[in-house]
Amino acid sequence: MEREGRAVGAASGELVTIGEFARLSRLSAKALRRYDELGLLRPALVDPVNGYRYYDPAQAEEARLVAWLRRIGMPLSRIGRVVALDAGAAAVEIRAYWARVEAETAARRDLAMYLVDHLSAEGRAMARIPGTTGNTGSTETTGSTGTTGNTGGTGSTGSAGAGSLAIRCAALTDTGAVRTANQDAAFAGPRLLAVADGFGEGGAEASAAAIEALKPSVWGSGGGAPSAADLLNALEDTADSASRAVRDAVASCAAPEGSGTTLTAMLWTGSRLGLVHIGDSRAYLLRGGELFRITHDHSLVQSMIDDGSLSREEAASHPQRALLLKALVGEARSAQVAVASRPDVRLREVLAGDRYLLCSDGLSAVVDEADLRAAVVAADDPEEAVRRLAGLAREAGGPDNVACAVADVVVEEQEREQEQKQEE
Image (cartoon, rainbow, N blue to C red):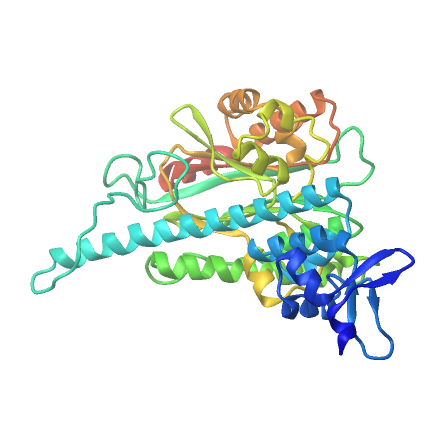
């Protein structure tokens, strides 16, 4: 019919056919029909008799935006939200999406490098066994990146034969000076060190559930030390358990998708620490008098620091500094999104004398790392350390809940001696 090939008039201005609009927007008619079916880009007019679609030429920019967002891999459901926003809000949403993609890519890269190191080490070990062959690699250390000196293991104190290792730990939460309720949770035990910072209507329930899901872990209780592969699998299972526990805990909330928690936890195997991390709570390592941050915030401002668009000083007062890119939340997610939103998991080798600090942003956001280091160094034991740290947050105004946990890696014989002294 002639009508399909020509523009038609309308009260809002001149409309064009789908074919002409496809040329304007540089998209195919097939793509435009698909966008219409998904509700991403509706025609300005659909003929009620023959169903022909007509578009306003002003929609071309919106059509290109949809195409560009598809090109960077954004899910269709999220594109629908973005195109409904004004330009400024859409820019924030796109930045948040891409920062999340980069964070997930970095986590996969770290795991890939760990596997390369681990398999290279196994290859070298096999090559040393008479009658076997194997590839040798050039990487000499295994474990996670981000700190130096990860060469410990069972019985490692920096010298051979010094005995097996144990952890001595303490945890504390504080409501702070401003909040009336405490949604943070912390735990310290012989196998688990964890902090969680809840948010939303069910925040307190979410943080408690996330940590409770980790407690059944009995790492290192079997015969012999588990392999690195077994530990990584166990970490993945633990992270999934925490995610399910949070969803169940907030399911009865009016808006469960708005409730959730961060989680930073370390599980002690007797020879290694397994790290589970999501959100902007943090883990630090004090080794050799230096304090290293060993987690990466899953937040919008951290992504902006990473790409150089924001300084650390500017991040402290940024209006969206609390916006998380990843957290354990109550909403149901597709399998693809659920996998992409998993916590980071990692293995860490330890040395006797290491001191680990885990904390929520109620501490790290108001106390700078120099003061954190001074407090952690000065404390004689973990109990004193957590009290000092909570006091620092209070001195800084205590604007948020605080959760912190501290653990010392000690030689087991020294731990028994310490316990005996306390009993006396």
